[in-house]
Image (spheres, rainbow, N blue to C red):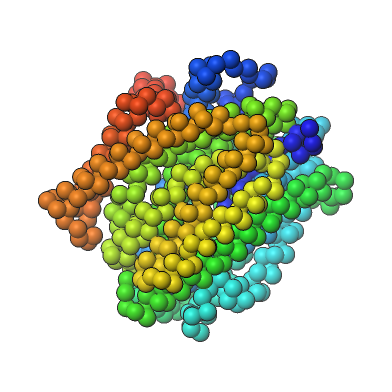
Length: 613
């Protein structure tokens, strides 16, 4: 077997949350680690029985990790609610969104993707194998990455006008370009703090401390919410619609946003000290193992470059869409609209898939390191089925209720209900790709577990080629909000093609992914989801006609629609899953029922302790 196949590289993808690698001996892995000896299954019944047992274990561990993620995401949504209340969906909002998005994008481009996909898994291994518990390796990694981040942060601020010209449409006039550049200069220092947060949180996770990295983003969100409220108090909700902000108003938004990111990183320092880690600068990088990780990072860097090239096209088209909407006098829809639609789209993935993968992957890396590739395949396929059991009904419900949810979240202040409803309709388009997106995320973890970073790069090339190949022609053949919807639909097509190709390639690499069993489960879940969608669609039509009407400004009517449709969709899916004997859905229901009973009897405190550990 090659060295690459024996390695372990189970880190994060460039576009996801950076908290995905935990300690080899941490409580999450202890709950989900597979058996020491390879499992030999003699029949399909044995396969199904073993898979269900592993699924229950994985569900329990994932629920612990999901707690912090849920709280972080809730405050993150509140942050976006405050943002749209302050700036709406107008050109000013696009300028802020562009300036505030670039630090995250450039962080991933500079070091984030390679750090999470390659360097951090190496840190996990060194903490297990090195006599000093990986202290020296962590010191060298933080020193090197910190220097790189600082240099690029300063350079990005100096090059802000050029970066804005790259990411924004050329249709911006001078005032719009200057506003976006001002936001960029204030926000680009976030690059450094994003990197420091990722490094420190991974060191904590590798030491089995999961709570602080999960909850630190909550502080960031609270600071951002306070910033937007302060802006509303000072400037009101009409400033964004007028299209002109004063320098002081720009400073409030830019500095407040960057302060939140800085505090998110700084708050981890005392937690690290309590965990027994004190950073010491080390510059003896030669022969330390960083070179091997750097070699593996080449393909990940290329993957990030491809994704960011695609993102440049998306931001230029999305900002152009809002310029076109302003010129035509139609409902504003541009980059902010695209981002808010994508936010709702990502919520199920962030809470469910990321939590499950967080629980699975440290054990997956160790199994791959021992050469048990069939077990890796079984773990990946089990995670796929579990994720799908939850994602499919959520996707079906959100396809119907997303317009209402968007109105309830974003239809206030500077934003209007019509603007928010349009963002929700674009979310419904995104939901067509929720299943393949979340499953190819799981599949990518399988590639990283065997330190194959080349295949994810090729898959990303394929995804971007398909997505842009579909989106660009559509964009120029439609008008209004449909231009933004065309960008979402392009990525839906890219998700499906990439998912299928990645499944085939990983199955070949690992010698199988229990593909037929997984396909049968997915088909039954999709049928249950389609039944639920059809029933919701009919109920929605009846509600709109006879009860609530179709006015998005009628908040009570929107609430009734969302609550009734979500309950109907969830109930119909569960009934269909029970009728078709979809075991993964039953496992989830049983887990939830057990947890409710334990908490009602006062026995549910163990999970909180595990989270803090």
